[in-house]
Length: 274
Length: 164
Image 1 (cartoon, each protein chain N blue to C red):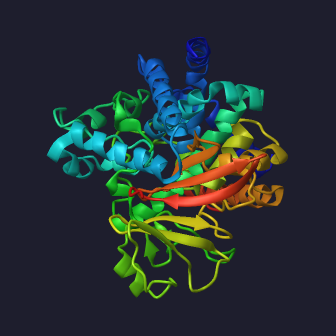
Image 2 (image 1 turned 45 degrees about the vertical axis):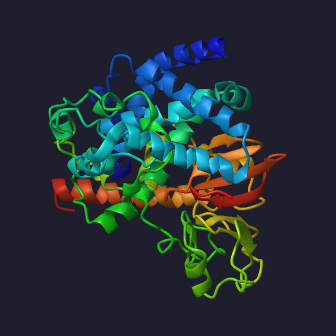
């Protein structure tokens, strides 16, 4: 008996162990169904609007609902719920309802085998796939640059969603900045159009979108990627118009246009619109 | 649409225990498992007809989505943890049913892609080719991740149990 065989047998034994069972909380099926309907309704609503407006609904709508639900206590929720902020993805972090008992207690007393992650979710807008502010840390720096320019979750290099025209101009990365936007205007990069074709800046909202040419997302999706690659990289993406929309993880969203199974356009949009 | 979601509800009821168990193997704790299953199923349910038509085997598609969501989720969490300086063990506060299983503890310490490869191989019984397709990586990467994982598991459990 070689050690390999031992390990094989041990792994199979472990993965066959009854203690791996997790009992579903009662009623979770209807919660999942409600979640599916909610996503579908939102997608149906999004399908009738276009482009940047889509993201405005997605992000702006989510923030508004959160504010209405949670009030001033919301800012404190992540701090009192370190467990949730560690163990949940940005797409499912659930801010504690202000009136609930201390969340740490309910988590600590949960017995193994029950699923209080499921139990802690509430119907309503709290499971929307937009991103709470606790997860908006820019993560451009940690993305390897070796395989081409990256359009990160919050922008491109120093150019970031929401950055004012003046600040964007000061980076020196844009051309044509002698003219400030009236309403909205598109600006090209001084480096050329290999990564991005243009950056749209609103006089009100600052940078509202980036239109990619050769740039890819940190998850390695770019124009020319297949729809399968897209779905694999963004399992949480929702259909949007003729393509997909995926929360970028920094308060923005990637909008992918898809035609004949290929990504044909890629845009990063923020909360502002034109 | 109502009929279609009724069908999905039946599917969820039937597949939930298996998916939670798989999620537990994949994530290493029941809470992340529940969270992962719910978020993936909500997405799947929202395009249930499309998923059924396109995949032919929704359950396999869902497990693939879970493996990928778990791997990419971990990437995000690691970045945030580094930035926010949160304690590593903050999410494990209640007794772990596998607390005294050195192999389970060793699995926990694997990077999630390696762990996903092990789970797909030993829990799901997939071939290297199938694992490669599921995770969107090459078979070469599957081989190297599997051998790294096995070496690391072997080192940890034999190191903890006996001398060399």
